[in-house]
Figure 1: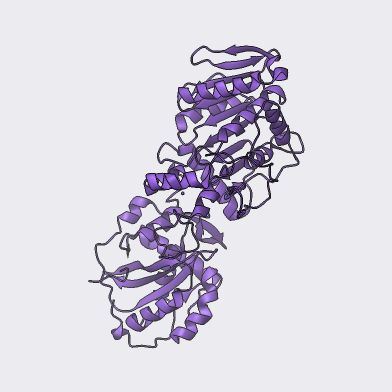
Figure 2 (figure 1 turned 90 degrees about the vertical axis):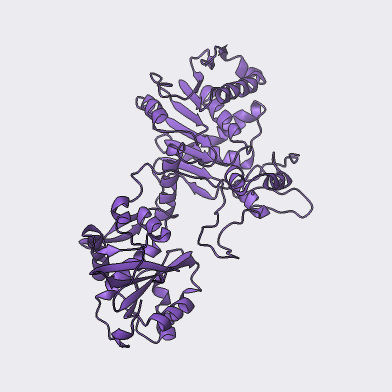
Length: 514
């Protein structure tokens, strides 16, 4: 049975204001994007201590790039009551861009201006924490006004610290399950946050519970899979805030990365960033023009594999789930158990179309009766929408379906008129209550094991990222975040519903063949 699913340092220039766009002067250096592609901050900002941190760093000989100043300005935003607007700040940027400068400026401010009693700087490896200690020490020693306020530089291995006469302490530790326990930190700096799991968080997070105005900073590069547990959580929160248009109330998130192509992208896709395009390196590396050059990134691309270059230079990360953020509606095991090796539905079939709200992808799904239950498949799933009508015409002429279904209130509703004209049939559109009924029927069919499918990746991925949204007294499918495409799931759900919908048959049902 044949299935239907057939990326030499340039001389610095004067700082740019944070809102200045990327420039490409024909006769001068090229600069990376100074604003992050993925960005969210709490909406409670009234003022910021960021400029104090920038100015203090300059006194110590540390001149910050515009993007570093932007992060400090936004991350150190203050509410009307004087407390931090963001309890958590996360900076996700490829290596060698200068995240260390942000760390150093924030720590200097906490010691010498902010009056933070204890600042804990942790890294995954001891040598990283020790190098950070040496850099901050050098900055302080270069500024006599700051150095004279230091009571002691502690060099004991594993207990490196800087202590002021006024009592403030900056400690440097390597992370472990027990490190940080017993310390009450006003500010926690978690370097190398792409290697940060539950053990370290369980040890460090409680240290801030007794602090009146605590803040935690996560800094690192793209996720590397299973070790990036906490970074994955933070990123999902940021994406959810961006998707909903409602800022996370306690998170400031800054990510420089490309919007990489998906597996479904066709040749020539212009909606995503090409790995080899110079512009991709600029999008993901704000330090280009300051301490990096475009030429250097091009050398890296020639020497590195595609996956390594995408991760290390373009910020394309792998972020694990902690199990609470995926497969929330239908369990993975329950879904996989319904997979069929083939399909041969009996009688009429129905097709449905859906697309993402931002119109980045669309999907066509089909449903038919098989072995006493319903079988669903994703017939086509591609970027964009221009292909849908022509593909629908091919399917209609070949399979002569009972119905075509599109939710008029959904993103694909704009296609109804063209589809009707092209196919010469009425496009069935469910009412609001019927959209809820369709989701309920799909769910029930999985529960009672009367549904089958081909275990296709687009449908499984959609189910893994789907949530419920209230619809009257019932519910319909909802996306978990901006990076979740549930159009294959919605299309399959509507196609199944269409099998039982009342439509006028325009062809002999006996002519319908799967």
